[in-house]
Length: 205
Image 1 (cartoon, rainbow, N blue to C red):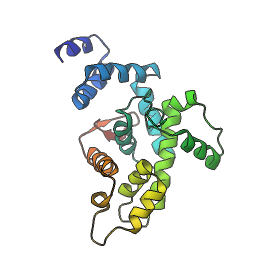
Image 2 (image 1 turned 120 degrees about the horizontal axis):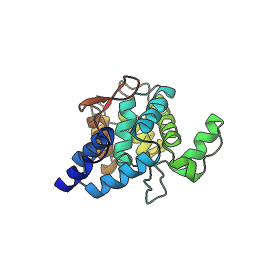
Image 3 (image 1 turned 90 degrees about the vertical axis):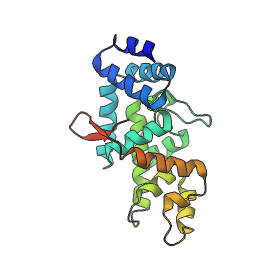
Image 4 (image 1 turned 60 degrees about the vertical axis):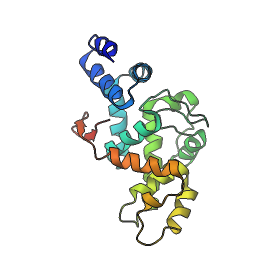
């Protein structure tokens, strides 16, 4: 850790701030180097923040929701690739990207295009908005939408139908990994905040 602090002192303050945050949350200097290198190769932290802010505004979401999901999915690593073929910071499946293109009238992104944060974030925001709209009849549609994002629409709908009266949905989710996913993101959204460009508050990730 001391060695990494010494290295961080040699980089610009904005990058050092980002790297310190990642070390605090991951405890891994090697991972921080890889994620930070990938992020700044795509234009820097400011560019990433602007991409998330744009996607959040496009689909009327809180930017801190996108940041919390990005951290949960990939620890905000734009170059992340999942074992099942998930791509980028938000771990978008190619099939989801194709569905997004069909619904929105956009061209299907190539794999290279899908790794770009602005594209990855827009598709993620679109998918989260679909989940929120699907469960808008609920007092709090967010946990349902997060389950929709993580485990798929059909499972989320089935779990909602089988939800016993008086039981919180995030406590009922049958899949332990999805249950933890939902709880972790909702908890992260209530942590301390820091400012992103445009004056919006974002999760302190």
